[in-house]
Each structure stands twice: as C-alpha cells, then as structure tokens.
Image (cartoon, rainbow, N blue to C red):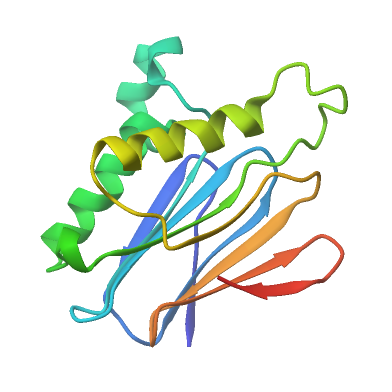
Length: 160
C-alpha cells in the first residue's frame, strides 16, 4: 500500500486501489473526503479557511486553502478521473477549536458551517462526519473500499 500525504491547503486524488490518502493533525482545518465506489476514484482536501473572499490572490494561487474554492476543485478533479456526482460518498472531519479556548475567532465552527452550506447549495449529502470538539485528528481514506478512518490526538479510532 502506498501512502499519499495531503498537506495543509492541499488536495490529492487517486484511482489506485493500493493507495491510502492521509492528512495529519487537523485542528480547525477540515478534511473533505470523497469516494466513488463504482469508479474507485477518491480524494481528500485539507482546507484552512471558509471564504476565499478574504484573500483573492491567495485563493487564485492556492484554491485548496479555502472551502469555497477547494471543494469544487476536488470534485472536478475526481470527475476528470471518471467519478460521478450522484455516486460520490462525502465524509468530513476536523473543525476543532484548538488554540481558541474562548472560541473568539471560531475558525473551526466557521469552516464546519461553510462545508455544510456548500454541500447543501449543491444538493450533496454528507454521509458522515467527525467535527468540532477540541482535539486534533488524522484522517485516512483507503482506496480499496472507500473506508475513512479518523484518529484523534488521544489515540481513539473511529470509522466514518
């Protein structure tokens, strides 16, 4: 099995059933995981912020940094490899309040809200999610069968 690492403000896609796509240490960021079980195409986006309007230049240079530009990019890239919207399974993890104990900036919550709005507007259902709280997560997508495993900082394991 080969491991494909998704960094912050990054996304990766695959159609190799031997691959595992993984992102580490999600805090307030969100991992959006998509998988088409028939085409065996999947991908993961690790975005930082909800709205690209806060920095249009950064959004142009790196659309994966923002929910509103990264999510469409992830889907379109999967479509180019044979995935179809109606078959896509969508799972979401992250959006924690890590360094913001008073919840002043609410970046994690804003990210969660942005994801839900984008999918609702586009008539896409989130199959399952592990969001919020106050701990980091590592997320894995296993391309063999589309399983998504989430590990939190305390070592707890959860399948979405």
